[in-house]
Length: 138
Image (cartoon, rainbow, N blue to C red; front, side, top):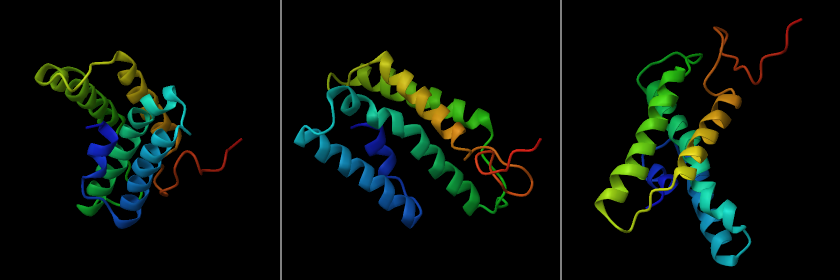
């Protein structure tokens, strides 16, 4: 099972569920039709895994009553990166020959985490504006 497919079976808010399911379906259809190049097909799931997982974690925190402006601390992203890398690149390959350890997957997880941070989803000020949408000050 691929990391993104695993994330997509977790409970999510309705809008995010459709987005995650659409990403997985588009990836699978694109791979089978040969539309998605091999390198992209090999690492797209890994690249999207952490942004999707962190959005779900953020949503779960919001359900517990966190204020609207609250964002995940950076350490949560790093912990998720380490956890996903250990599970999918060390533990599962050690348990079954079906899984393959690939250090490039870990790099893709890291790039996904950076994309999540750059998207401004993790950072905000007290007004609830993310760094990505906040007007620049001079």
